[in-house]
Image (cartoon, rainbow, N blue to C red; front, side, top):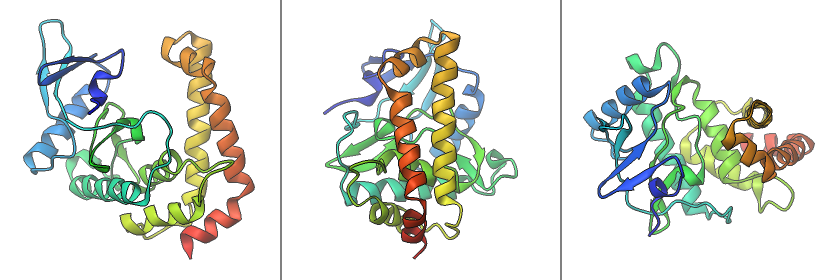
Length: 232
């Protein structure tokens, strides 16, 4: 089995723990993960504190994370959608949502999803979590898990599967949300690369910005079909 926590150069895997760099959103992440733990939800790691080198100590979640862009089957998509609905419902109406609809993960991706026997059971990398609308995370599921674009297999049907499994009631702005998230990601990569951020420079060199651009253009060109499929 592969441990996602050991796959990033920013993360060290030590026995039953992972050591991650501190970040500006760590106070919110700590409060969120404590809330999940208090509610008995096991879909996120436990944040224990900091070590002697001032790194964040998280529990290890055993399982597999997908990094190779493979086709994800319907069971995987449905499992991910159910997990998102669970943590959205756990945070909706709480102090963590700060008057927004819920708390969003904001970086949902198969790389940040831990599965066992092909079924997702947890998400990691909560450092971008923040209050927001449910639609943002559902849009990321439809984009990053289905990967709508040239050659995508049954993208409209698979996006509909995610929406139905999640139970998204208002889907009128879903495709616009996907495009907005794509544009925002592309801008972040390009701006970070220009500013000299090592991670963003690496992503840009690997063609990530161009791939997101191509996906954005495909979604825009197929806007009507996608909107009709998720709303039907």
